[in-house]
Length: 439
Image (cartoon, rainbow, N blue to C red; front, top):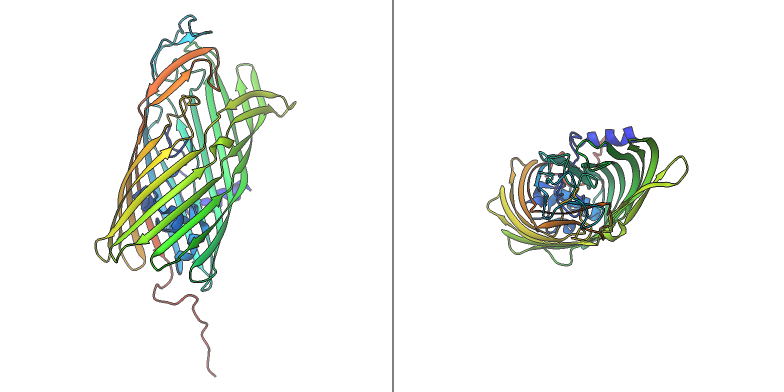
């Protein structure tokens, strides 16, 4: 099954890198920005109402009915995240007033050298009312690797990575002139590895938890066109219960383990409105149920006893965005948008793996119709993340015997390019009527 999933994804995207950097482009280790270059240029405003092109299928499968004929879209996104945790007090051992730790240094940049995130979408209209399609992408990802592996908080985190591949077969049906419905099955592979230190010495041996799994979820949505030029979309993405199986490595040996990661479900709403032949405006709201991501026991497969626990205790996240498009001429469209996200991560539960906080999106981009069949999309977003503080001072969900406080000032640059190609003749009516041969 795993090889089949990887083959399906490789047919439409490059699997070279499916990891985002330490300050992800959405709450915690979620990735919003990799799905659409067109959407990135508008802070994903109107994602659920088809306002961001074929990438909308990843939010609302009903938007597949907005693309007549046979179409494919490929996107390649580069995420460059920057954050460094610098201690704000002396790191202590055993108690807030205990002896000083032998390590007092900061993490250095935890974002690494950035990462590429590919995604794709394809839609095939079978009749005047029925579509099938496929979207692929990486909805979750993390690469957190501090420049200083031996830092003052190494018992809480030396490095972390999460990689996903999501392949979603999709169907859509246009009920009438104003209503479309759609659904998709999510087939999601996830691989995770977390590395900490077994002690506070610079040479302390590592403790590593790693595992992978393939699990399933679904999406469904509706798209309404109550008036000409108005699109309203609302969709639901189910939770995916990822049942990881892997190993727990310590200086004492290796234990086979399993853990259940309850990744969040979400609801998204979008509105797209044509103002005139040149201007169109978009808006979006997305709620993500991160509060289900709480305490995760890591259980030995030998005796069923927990060997450790990953404690997150997140809050729900909200994302709001607005954007506008200006059709400069027949071929060139310019766009811009702004978004604001209320993060699932706060000063109570933030870890040294993730420098996440509430964030402001500033986006711009454009599209150029190269030929009747081929369109190029470019998008750029700068994300300003609020100052992020880490406080392992007794009440943290992952508290150990090291008392540590630090602060980071994260920011993220994202650039994306996309191509959309129509395989059939845009001038033909769908479906093509069969040829009747005369005797």
